[in-house]
Length: 465
Image 1 (cartoon, helix red, strand yellow):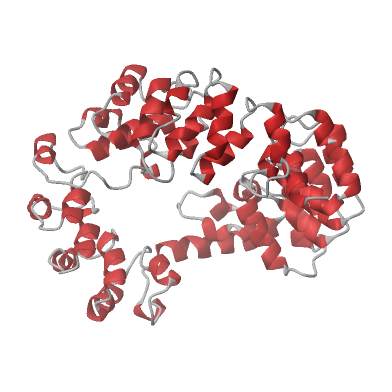
Image 2 (spheres, helix red, strand yellow):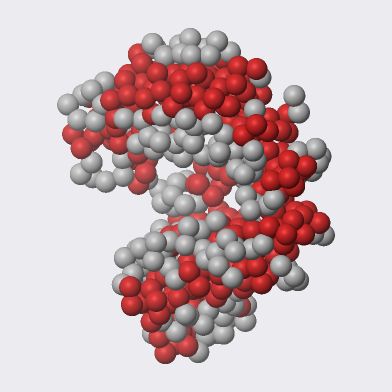
């Protein structure tokens, strides 16, 4: 069996459950691995994989993004450890119900979730990062050991864990609360800059630690200290004049800057500093209008999903981009920003308002946003299909790919683009269901396009079989 053909048929959306079961019966491991490329798995196929004697088949099912949560919950009791651990899953999968997660937590903390290849701590880590609601469920778990496990997350003085009826939970919560609010000391700073450095320097800082960082003069450390809200005002003044522009940009992110400090940063010789301070809440719109910024900075700013709607009218395109990311943006403002002069604003509207963004905006963004990272626009559910055949001879190969989306594109045109100079265009055309069937079948023997042809939903059923 040509494995490329197997992989293609396995992810072919038109492949019947019978075809998929046949693949599993004849090439179980290879087929199960290939089935991970499907968005959905038919229920009968999931059941066959769940009952399969081969451990790897059950593991592949446990990791599938479309696995039924009930089936995945059953795999948590699998006799093989690798299957059980994989069934813990990831946040991208459909969530397990609260009762299942609660039972799993109890099993792990009472030692009834057998481990061998992994330590109990590693299994807990898998749960923490793999189950989206693990933290929420653990906080109210009947087992005090589980509640104590999340004591380190306590940040607020009124957190219920601080008044938990169990003394061990209270102690863990008190320790977590105290650790979150204590000032870090110089001896806690790593000798060399590492991942731990950034974490330490984002916590409350003692004056002694700030002085140590100033003395060491490491720009990467100084950038974190410049942003930290607990850095003393006199140290902020020192950093405001630092020769490293990124350190000064870190200062520009602070909310406690004086009017005089803001004016200094607005006139900073480095564009990255001026751009950073241009969105500061202490500036007026009139002041923002006079700042020379670099509007080509990265478009996405996920930290402002609830950005004030008023920013939609700002003179600063960076603030308008943030407003465009607000899911509660009124329809009239959304439409106004869809025609904003800044391409970054328009792109944010296209991304964050998937159900209401004008179809013509999506095409406009795709045509304007040259380079990587725009394929998601082509796959957008509201992306227009009509009239795209006109791009068959466009200079940009990414634009030529759009021809495959046009329901009116002639099959002969799709076939012609199979000979395109760009391999990406050839692959998109090979996947197009409007490609003449005889060409799809002929491509099965093509080393580069055989797998894609096997995944084409217009491939005749007899060929799949």
